[in-house]
Length: 397
Image (cartoon, rainbow, N blue to C red; front, side):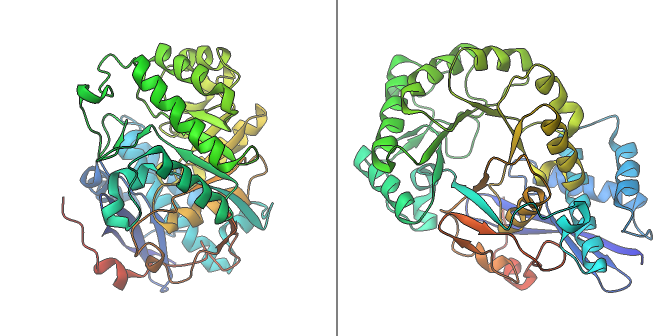
């Protein structure tokens, strides 16, 4: 079997693109991998093309060897856009190999460890505050709307949710500097150029998480995602504010493992981090310091090969992992296979509020019921991309 073609597929997904690698072979088998990147789409596409020279004409099945050769190409620019290109190709290679053997991907790694996977409703309120007109959801005008959303989470069977700093209003605002939809307005007290939350913002966070807690009750988990939006002092202040609500975790990112350890030691709130890190080498300094409680792993950005190695390394440090999954449902399947092949999994992310055509992009539906995903048993990832449906939703930047 030989690789005959490598191409990128891009689908418009409302406010961002979803992007995929497709690898064709001379035996007719096709593999797909997701590598969605809303900020550097064309950079990733260019890097995928740069890697073609070491892949075309070769057998796609020795995935580890092909990874070594791709790493040789990017070794002077590790991580970032280059690693994301490797990741998309890597995932497509795993899909081909599993299909050639007639088994799900996780079977090649000793799985499955589970038949169902617990999910949390991610960007709960965030998506509605920013893009409700696109996804067709009720607006977030008041804390009463937050309460109604929390009750909806419970009614639909989810046992956990994650939100960002959502500030209800007309329009509602989300405190996510540097991200699509961020409203930089000092008038509402959310433009913290020094990355240190004001007393007003801390009160808004307290009201948000408190409202969610009252709405969902004591047994549903709540997480707050702060991304890279504060410095160490600010993260510690937010942690103190949300402690009384017993969150599942506070999620944040920092490129300083010692700073993350300082934040973790300052609070009883579990700390989740790592979505911006690459490869075991990137995670190890955080693990060595035991700076986090849950390691977030992005499969589309690391690739399946690296993601499994990171998960196993985390297990050696007695740390649980959680896949970072705010992309299409191909990523959902890829994340599910990582969880099926791994024991030390806490929970998996899913965006419930999304564009109406999200489920149409796969040839087989993702099975989700009462907040749990059924791990697929079909070969490869368990579904292929519906390329005709992707073509209906072109992306224009």
